[in-house]
Image (tube, rainbow, N blue to C red; front, side, top):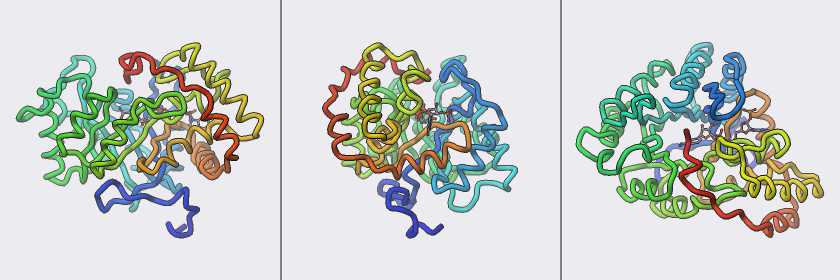
Amino acid sequence: MSDDSLPAALRPRRFGSTDLMVPPIAVGCAPLGNMVDTFAYAVSEADAIATIHATVASPFNYIDTAAHYGDGESERRIGLALKEIGGLPAGAVLQTKAGRHVPTNDYSGPMVKQRFERSLELLGIDKVDILYLHDAEHTTFEAAMAPVGPVEVLQDARRQGLTRFIGVASGPNDVELAYIETGLFDAVITHNRYTLLNRTADEVIEAAHQRGMAVLNAAPYGSGMLAKGTLAYPRYAYQPASATLVETTRKYEEICGRYGVPLAAVALQFSTNDPRITSTIVGMSNPARLQQTIDLLLTEIPVDCLEEIAAVPIPRAEDPEKDRWK
Ligand SMILES: NC(=O)c1ccc[n+]([C@@H]2O[C@H](COP(=O)([O-])OP(=O)(O)OC[C@H]3O[C@@H](n4cnc5c(N)ncnc54)[C@H](OP(=O)(O)O)[C@@H]3O)[C@@H](O)[C@H]2O)c1
């Protein structure tokens, strides 16, 4: 299907101020890292490989991973899937992230370089489209920006053509804003902080958008509860959801039930319909999710339903340190 023949909601968008076009949805491959401590369920290698095959065959041929997901397991499985089809297909976009070595907390430049080299090896490719500084809250701004530090490693990778663009993918707003203000980055990723249940990343999204950067909003379902529901998956940002978050989500479920609309559609379109957001990163670990995500994006949501959802008070943001990516 050519881009023009796609429904508007599925059409690619410009990646910030660059010439790269990306789909409105990126497939988040954290679950493919089989991170039972983080997601509370296992994902088999077969499901992971099938999900990547479905991803590259879909309009959402945009893969998001990180060295950190399952300590390389997500990248290894993506690499296996890509090998089976002769590499990353033309037109597909792949991004990864490099940061600290978790067991030693080493966030030095040489370690970040080593992590990125391992990513290329596991993925079985010689370059990526976008490389992000991952979870920079685990180092200081000064250390990251120092000569031969992590940010210089990313810039060197861009100069050498090992990545086309660089970005920052962290948690707390102050960390994200410090890197945005350097003007060195092409893109930013926010996560779990711009959903129906939490809007704290709004200032990050606005600052990056004003600078012409690409804005990627990850975890529109807050790691799953807004898609799977409060009964099946009462978790938010990789931990049990608080009573307030569950209670608010139940109100959303009741409203959506009356209108016959999946809550996941409202949660997803909350992100995809924000004109400042280039692409929304949705985590998934089975191939059926691709068609489901298309259906959710194309779901027509009655205005009255959206108004009722908007009238539910947003819970006060909990301690931002609590929803760190582990
Ligand atoms: N620092 C950073 O840059 C950062 C931080 C966090 C996340 N991320 C990226 O963003 C991605 C998204 O975040 P996330 O995966 O944590 O959370 P998420 O996208 O909010 O939710 C993912 C969960 O939603 C479920 N799901 C997806 N589509 C569904 C559907 N149609 N129906 C029912 N359930 C559905 C998935 O289930 P199944 O697994 O069963 O398919 C998975 O459990 C990550 O995978 C990662 O790539 C980046």
